[in-house]
Length: 298
Ligand SMILES: [Fe+2]
Image 1: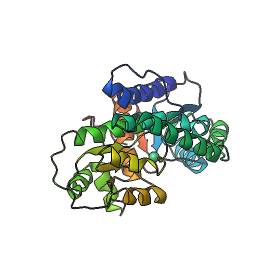
Image 2 (image 1 turned 135 degrees about the vertical axis):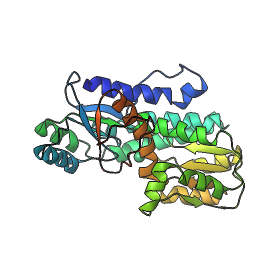
Image 3 (image 1 turned 120 degrees about the vertical axis):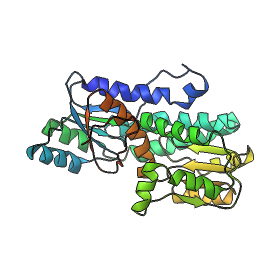
Image 4 (image 1 turned 30 degrees about the horizontal axis):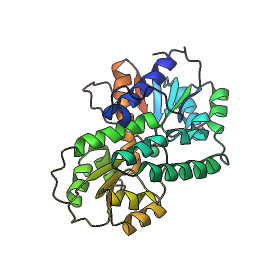
């Protein structure tokens, strides 16, 4: 596959799963600021990709070493943003704002919180060095892509579809349901299973999936979500401040796990790439699992 076709397929899958398009088909046709071709000519033919949740210079050196030992990896796909994808991460936070508003949060309040989040995150991001991977990729001549929010959109819709029909009795049942997903059960075996914040015996009520939009939300949002009737959140991870705010807001949350949840979206993308003839080498953090029925293995 051409490098640009691999990238464009990821973006297309992200658009198809974008909640704005799920609600109103065709309403969002743009790309995602945290998805980028970091290195490699876009017309380069690539046959085998190393795919990881995170990858830094060390993984690129690993790929180079694997190739020395006979593997023929000719591209790297990283989920978490790097290069311009890292610096421009806040360009996708508007998806979160859309999600809050679709649950009924007042647009003015949503706007205020959104602006604060973007401002604060931009200050953090501008202090970072997101250039190391691109630099190493150039020296090693390895094409690299980062594909972040497009993947997280797939995760968002995957979970939304599971809990669309909410007939589960308790928050604990929601957690068990999540733990039955292949990637999550795999992570559980490593001691990285899903967990509950709040009351495990409560009824799940109104469930909101919070998987996409680039960054952790501002802790202020949870009291607003409680006010508009959200009872249970499902998210891949939250920081300490958010966990505290969730408890204070008396919302319950089920945390599905970072590597497991990202793997769910990456696996969907890998399945499609495999169906187009690409070989996948599962790298750091990826619990590889096929759902498409293809039988190619690596
Ligand atoms: Fe992630």
